[in-house]
Picture 1 (spheres, rainbow, N blue to C red):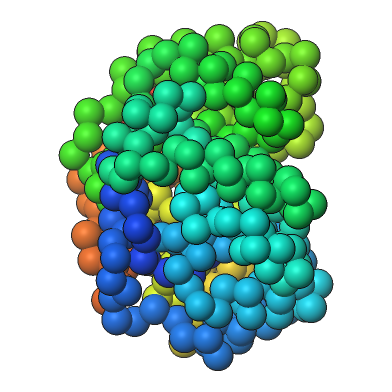
Picture 2: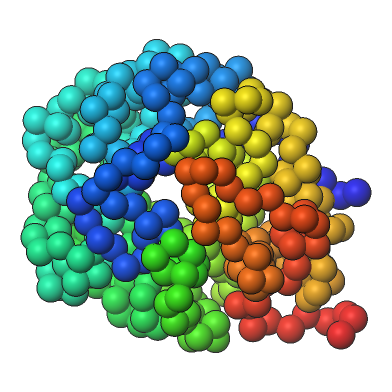
Length: 358
């Protein structure tokens, strides 16, 4: 067995709420205005912080839904900070006024990722389903900067246009933002039935964007597109901070609103629940994570690909390819009948054809 990693997680995303004022067409949790039953309560959330701290000091991303709709957000952030964790947040910026930015800073939030999908307010608002969302997002960037909080811009690529990405990055640079995460949508949640980007065209977007910003004028990382590591290598671009293409279950995981621990937000397969099993036990002993860490279990072209060590294929798309997705959320996420067989198949969106068995 060739295990990729067995150390502590570096990053944990945590859906602390499923409430949100927006109606984003690509929302992976299908967030709404009402909180479903089963979401972790305040005391349970603080216990999760203790469980995380017992295994290390990862960056914890408080997410949603919209995390600012949770009344105890600052209490959770402050407690995590006191325990030595690096607490950050992902938000639409809809409720992030100047006073809220100050409260987040005082609670120990080190950085905030704000979603901005276009430089055109009408396009962004249409995508987000609420008028005025663009203006609030841009103002949220300014509010965080004014209060000394680091800002990252997240954008989702919904059409094969590198120009869309470049326009957002250039706009962000004018705002003083240097960090960007570019998401390529995975068909889950409200995006389950969306038309995916053509794999070859989305590789062209990745290639063009990597070439545009190879000068390190910004920190940019494609997400949910692990093939970017192969493309970057072909272009002679190497950034140690990137790490492996797909880090799901290896150095990263997601804690869902009900306490289920999954490899990533787009792979709704429960490795265990923090209400019944300590996080450390789930992280170190779950068969789900063990399968993802064993590159010898990869099958199809991912299994014999020469880039499997730095890429690994998108495990969420591979699982989606089996049509095995669960639509059950807070009542418990699905566990696949054959973990390796369903999680370790080839990535159906990768157009690369490696040498080896056919």
